[in-house]
Length: 202
Image 1: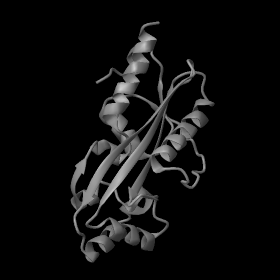
Image 2 (image 1 turned 180 degrees about the vertical axis):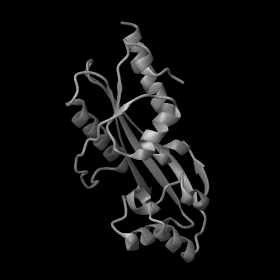
Image 3 (image 1 turned 90 degrees about the horizontal axis):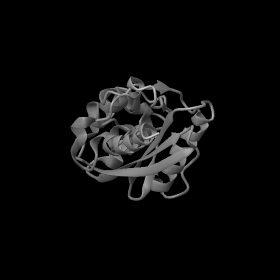
């Protein structure tokens, strides 16, 4: 664990370039103090490989927010669900959500999150992607319909949230659980620690 940067005036503030309540909750869970400044960019359609695309979008979000501040460390992130090599974004409507969940039912898919850190003052950028394999059990049609009616899938990549009701759909995962929620906490802490230690050495 790393200490909150606000406990030492020599360390930079953390700025989350996302309005995702799930990402904010994850940062709070590990005891970080931060401010939220959404990038508010229009996300382009994925044309590159998903792992490259999420990194490109994460750094774009981080750079957009970094331009608004004189100092601090900006965290940008983007998550995509991939099944059979095809990226799946957020559902367009309830019918689309049902289609997505039918496709995930009884199958394995990948959740890939791109993360970008920008140390504004030092103009230092770090970008990486983390991948987690998720295995769904076979879902009954009534489960899918009930879940979609709950409203939970509407704002989530892949039309589900593992931290919510859809946790009951998951047989197992291979990789970081928190990556599926929206931020790979272990690798994020490693990279943040490197940034903070470099400031402490000054």
